Length: 326
Image (cartoon, rainbow, N blue to C red; front, side, top):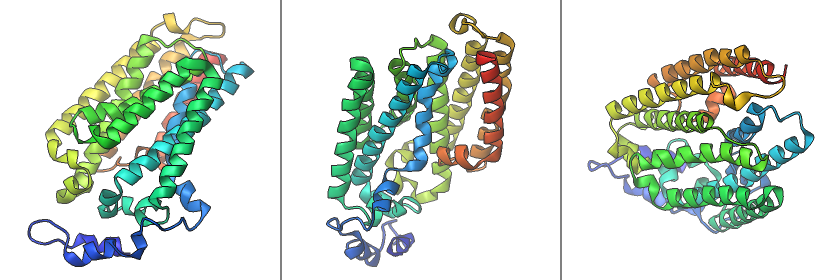
């Protein structure tokens, strides 16, 4: 593949001329039509849709998923976030097309590879985002619409400018996780406790920081060609940030699990909720070990492929469901 030629560099760190010429060839003509519907689906990043299950966390913690109406609104919120997030992924791929073509893995993305044209990506993205915003109004009114609009605004700001700002970009990406959790609560009319928001925020920062740490080592000396903000970080800072966010995530989770005020409803059994601290803390340590070894650049892959994460997640879910619904 022509993108692989970009590994050859001149003395000043720039790609040599024949690689640049290859990028301008027909394989990357922005006027190309998508080769198949599968290319468009792949551009929507289905693997990352797993993030949207966060919309179920608030109603589940409140013991409300036994209500059919709550289930319906939660699934609607799930689908809406898939649509809006996928639309924003397409916009981001268009804006990052040249950087993605230089990246060892992102060069395979349909937009960067020329399988989906810029015009097609922008059109599909605009339709998905617009449809999601309209659907949010009919699902749960203006409050849910505000959450989605804020998600879109932050995503656009990130793609255009914030991604170049050290630390701020970490918070910007983490906010996407937090807004999903908030959106689930708003869509299902479930109040969100302070500790719930704290756990979600610090866990999201932990995940995003781990992703940056893995990218820093995986991309090597060419890291700032793929993600410019990485030049602003050092391994020491990223390790310190990982330790801080992991500690804060576990601490706030313990405070949430042992806090009785937000979980008082029929069927609630305190000891089982408190036991969820064990798989949660072990999972955080397991992820820290993976990140320290250079993995974790794609958090969704950990959730979908790492068997120990799945085991810890299953244990957490069993304790949680028994505590809330048994």
